[in-house]
Length: 343
Image (cartoon, rainbow, N blue to C red):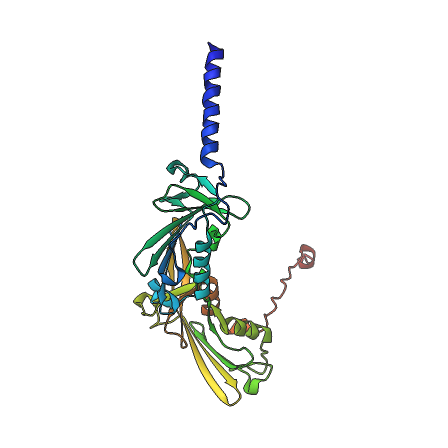
């Protein structure tokens, strides 16, 4: 009886192995030249919008605005168009010559299911045609599993990997929000809750001076240079939009920075305003909150997010940060012998 049962179990196992091989074994039925494009009717110049979603719930919406690409949910903040067209070109190159599976039962395992995916890309064309592509697990050798919605077939491609398609806004915009030449900057004013600091180097001299220094005080040049480096090249985490929300705190900013530049006979002034420190949910974990500061520039109509670390550094800057550290005297302790006297 036991031998008979073992034979039956062995037969079932063998059948399962055969089924798995049939489902998941890569099929090279077509050559690269013969294979059909995965998105046969997609024309990149007719695409009007892209929506990218990742498994953590992050979403980026990109839309065509004339000849340019923008973040439509951020008051049409300019996107880097070459990154969008590069993604569309890659999607257009995906071929169906590397068939991996043809049943719906494989979708969740390969993470190309409608409710379980690494990336979902929704593409809309001028004629209102919508294409939805799922990018799943790695197939090894710099390849990923892909599937088109409403089709069971899953293919392997090296054209698009999940990390090539980020659902974060910073991946699709130029994160350098504000910049001026350091060498042309001749004046800095930083005002926050700790007071007002004014630095200048008349006529572009190499050394900075600080207003209000006493004859005994010496300005630490490197610390001024560090401040200059930060505020002349300010990177953002992402745009917020053009409308000043009440919670942005711009009516009572936490820091205001004014830079004065001079190139030849031309002088310019720029203002950077740091508003409230806000927080938002992390999509992948609602119990975690991340913080950021709101920043605006006199050179842009947009409000943007900057990192908590960067914002804290400017909001908390004070006069003492630009002066030499005062040495703390080493405490002396009286020993029992030195303190003892004749009785």
